[in-house]
Length: 114
Length: 115
Image (cartoon, one colour):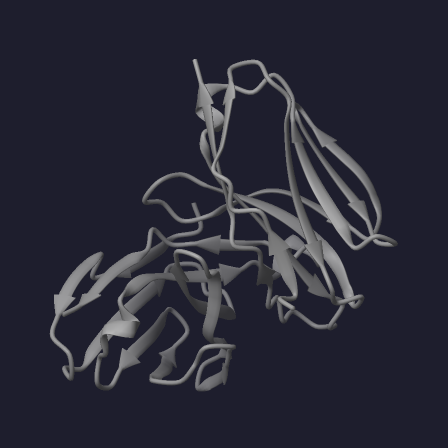
């Protein structure tokens, strides 16, 4: 079993739709959970991060972590064509120090149609 | 912009030839990483560095070596390129000043094709 599982999609939605992206993981040591957005032919950029369980909201984006189920989600409200990208989940344990080795999901390709 | 520059951005080479990819940063960050990204596999860590001459292996290090003789440069070398190393390679740095979030800043990527 892979440490991090992410449905690769592709996912196609109309503009204005609510989008739900999800990852599951198997390593109970993971404490920090992140979502990266990657536009075509670009490097990934951090969108949101959450420590441990709970929700975090930033504008149209909400990240949720359920550690009991080992499940994380990213919700996008009022999706826009500019949200079309690949979304990657990433996570790491609390290793101490500054060693930020992340384990990534494979990414979900999202297309928002005007 | 974390000041990361990767070179070359595109390269086509033949099986068996050596290849070196360069990652250059302008802000003296201690931690640097090399990832490869492939369809169906996502981002996988090849090697990382936590200071000058301090490097360690990631999950897919076979066939790759790295060097860091200066803080600003992290080199990835394929001693004898194989077709399985055709990929997009990303360099990343982490900002210690950002606290414990583990935020990585990525370069634009180097697209390598091994024929």
